Image (cartoon, rainbow, N blue to C red; front, side):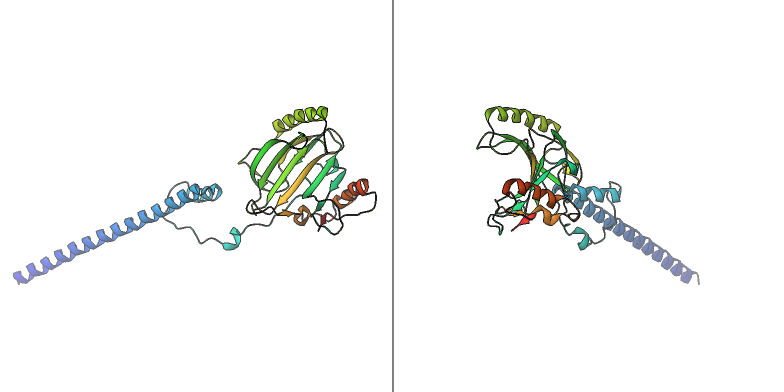
Length: 275
């Protein structure tokens, strides 16, 4: 009887040892999986930062408290990541009453036979006009430009919209050929505009954001605004009006007819987009 009890106790001890060993192994496996998940998330953050997508990387860090986590991110909604369509404000001017005329978009071989124009010109007779961004985007460049034909000065700037199009402004104190006196004054005005610009290359701009001022010499001072399909391949110009959601009810067409009357004396009545 005593012999049987010893055998029974030995069996109990063996079972206990096996149980402890199994529990320790299970705990080690759990820690190993947790560490692998943490490394995966951390390396994902690094890839996001290296790709330049800082907004997404910031979002991941905010959700995880800035540290690695064992929770895997949910599957990305494909509809949310699709690029938004370009949407433009009606004018580059903060105050839409500051422009008296608009030269519309016209392709090279348009049906009306008006002169080629790859964007909109917003003409003003004001000496100082506040400017705004007509769309969201990331700034590509801001620079003083001297026109090769006559040496006239202007400011050129552009940004790329989230949907890929390139929106550009040329801030021109006047229009047409300029003599030496006028050019000298334009250089001064270009320097003044450059100092007033609130953005630089690499900045992110928001629709409606204040950008600076156009300083004019006469009633032909204007912002020349263009929209290009993309930064890749051959230039493909787009009519800005095709991307203006609030075009109906605006005075853009009426003011383009004011411009056309001065140039064509009633012989032509262009639309905002002339194909």
